[in-house]
Length: 524
Image 1 (spheres, rainbow, N blue to C red):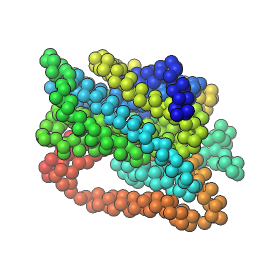
Image 2: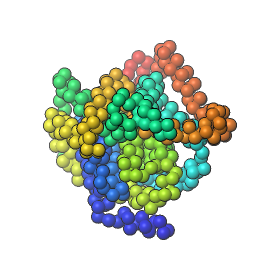
Image 3: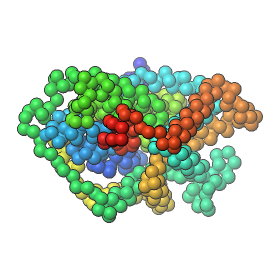
Image 4: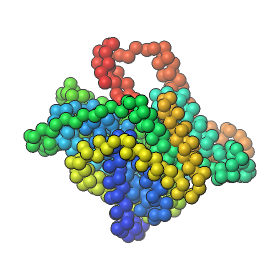
């Protein structure tokens, strides 16, 4: 109770509440602009937080994370273009409703389901995280090393369409994490003669390059090739019932929202799953629950509710492995991990032991962010149609300037600007060739923890690798990793043999879902 009262004193200050409000506002606006994802929004905001109080800084970024996740549904509904990958499932019914003159109804349903799912997920986080952190405190170096290895395997396996590509990118991230002076021997590793690399690659320039600069390059290519499609708005209905969610519709959708929230929370607990898969999983379950599944994909309001509940429930759940184990659940949580570290907060079980008051204050910020998300979004959707049509030729040059200012401002070092540019080109090359970028960043951030735990384990065992098997919990983690590798290998072998898709099979990718309706026919 003493810690809780101290957290109240820390949280109920104007800068903290203003940080939550400003973060949600920026997240909703940036997330609603196609090409500016929630992750990119956080990456652009982080340089503004260098000299802020830790609670204000984290509150601002958590608000942007939540606001950006919902904001992606706005262009998905209005333009048939997901503002974020997490909103890909929202397109299926949201844009169909817009074509029927019901864009406001779809946008409002997205708000209601997003806020309910996000709040439910936050409550689970608050209840589960502290006891889980107590358990994590009892884990030694072998268990931690095996857990991180298992987490990296999961992340690389599910981050893209190809496990091999995910593993390659994850390996690149581990190598990049090795750059700098060895923590024990002080030997230079991969320094290439640059003394600026003795302390390793700076996180913020790397993050800005991978996500913001690479996005600029991709959108520049799209515009240069003339592939930037013209968008079309559909006239809104003048009927009152077509512009609001009725009580009967809300009651009909509530069980679906709660079910999709549960699915999203469960999947969000697992590192690497991410909001896109959770959204499609919630959508698929809603279709099974519906008395009229044939309406899905044709403008069913239940489809919008399920998709938005599924992806927003991941926001809070992703923070469970982040705060308790220091392992980010998805790319957005990985960016938040970087923000925590910049502020001197090191996520993991020790965070709850050393900074429990700050953790409680962050929990309060999460709940307040949901309130602000609802209030801001209800107002914003009435002007969203004007914001989402801002030409990219105006947006992205400004974004690029912010990228370089942010990269330079971290250490006031021009070398960091070159780091941002190099990783921007690397991110562009990877994304253009179908490689996921998320495993690179997450592997980079987990490498020091993995290396430290691995070395400590070998010191404990006198150099024997058997310690990872003889410790029961560590052995279980490695066993799960082995099962995952075999399972993925078998699955890849089956796909390579060209196994035909059966009617009813769902094939999920980062940006779309294909449902096989009949043999030989595919409906997007």
